[in-house]
Image 1 (cartoon, rainbow, N blue to C red):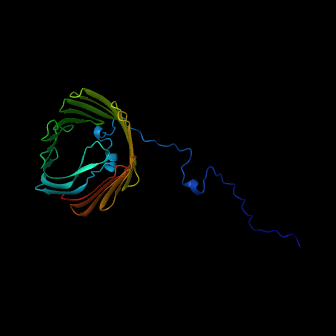
Image 2 (cartoon, helix red, strand yellow):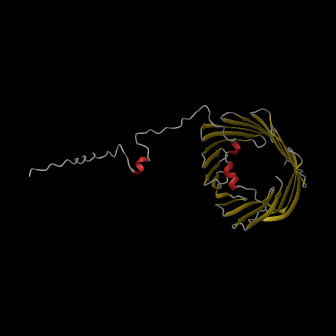
Image 3 (cartoon, rainbow, N blue to C red):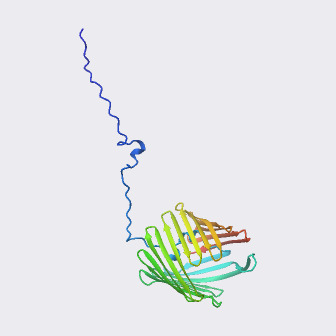
Length: 329
């Protein structure tokens, strides 16, 4: 027998080893290549956003840390007569602190009724309040042009030398704001704030109080992103103020502030929270003096809100509790 020959096809050669650097596996497929360059968003320095007004750079911190705390009973009612005009009624019954030379807090009972009238227009706002103790408060805001606004604040009292008045001229530019102030007692002031980056604005202010022969200058900075806001202010009067607000989520914010007064050597720091629920808003804080406060606004129905206010100072043994109701939008 001769030798037999197999006509079956020979097996193919094994494939060459893959180059892992050219064909990544696993998460390497999802990750960008190291050779890809990051595309940075160019900043249009000629089209920066307009900053907040100088006096409102701490807006978020003030909303969280300084709600309108009160002691006693408060009831507010607002009735709209038409789309622009409304009337308001407010009743307050509580106590008022009286200055004393001792460390103890002295309170006397007090109550008052307040009547108000409001006129709201896209270019004109008129707000007036009259109290039973003789005080009269008035506010006017008028848009003279698209960029120039006039604001007037006045408070008249029966007591001499306690009435106040202030005129503000606000000008809004594309990336800056400026304000000029004129008040009683020969008060003159001016401030300017400028956006220097998409998230950073710097400002300065000067004032002159002719009645007391005092003047001062101050500087401020504000840095804000979608998740946080940080501000800082320093003045020649010896006041340093810092604030920071962190937005944890759409409903929860944490805030803190620090204030130092060189003249009185007072240092105060506080930490607070702002929690917005579906039907209520809860704010509270604690400061370095041991004062704990909380403020709750509960929406009972359309146009009806229930308010709870509490402030406890264990060091001075001062306890303030209040509740109220607001009816009307």
